[in-house]
Image 1 (cartoon, one colour):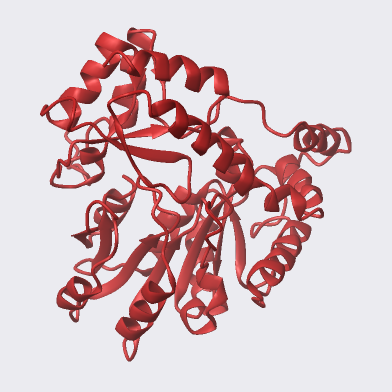
Image 2 (cartoon, one colour):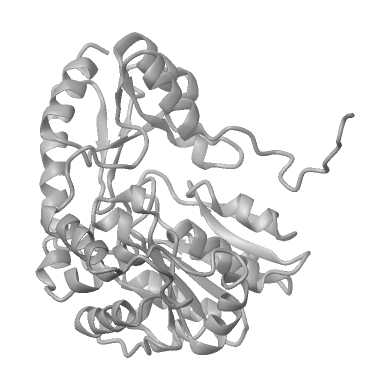
Length: 382
């Protein structure tokens, strides 16, 4: 018997990350595509997990997350952003930041709503919007700086606009939002009830003495925002799939209504370990310089290739322009890079709904130096 299901995501197939990772395995390529480190995470944090398990922290914790962990996060927000965030009513621990984004959208969207986002965009945004019966309104960032054109945002806002999604440091470009962006954003949100979703998973991975302008810094924006963070990205343990959402009490109440009937609660020993780890601010304050050195190491090596770097000010990623090498579409070039040269990257056109093609490919530099060395030697032959 054939069972027919009307797909809620009829236009979604296999993601580019799966495609490129499969090709990397097939061709024994060095994978600089997907955003995960290949080096060992901090052994101190590993030891804290083992200790938490040995001490018996292996059963359910509170639905909203381990209370001590939420308290430590509140302390961190005060230290970094001078933000007063109630750990009881405004912070929820989640199984990753993507889950936090999905849950926030599910809590606020009704069929027919519109959500403005900026492309190139993390590939979960549009499916998350569409599965909730809403419509994604993509606005392209201005190439090659990947800046937001706020005049275009004004043009797209109407009575159906329910939310705007921003992402800084930005995936895939590494661009960061500045004070002028915050001023423009505040002006656009004056006098309406549009909700802001701020994706800040690379919060601590910001370079060149730039400051991360978290929405937590701005109480008027915070009141209408869901802000998503990732422990996995910043602490180099992406497989833990652990993150958190921060919002005003009124919005978080709606978030938790969805959360309680989905995952309900998250991994216990990891939460206990991270709560202890956060006692020492240096464990997150040192992250930026650590990744900046990797970015610089990779960039210096890449000067020996025909690829041209587009500045990255944060995240795990650096974009490279290959127009001096080939006029091939990005997806074709990326596939050939794997099959002929043994290096996997991600075509940036995959981060656009309409596959905008600027002849740019994304590489992940959050790797061991030996991995980056081997990849660059192969890229020199392109």
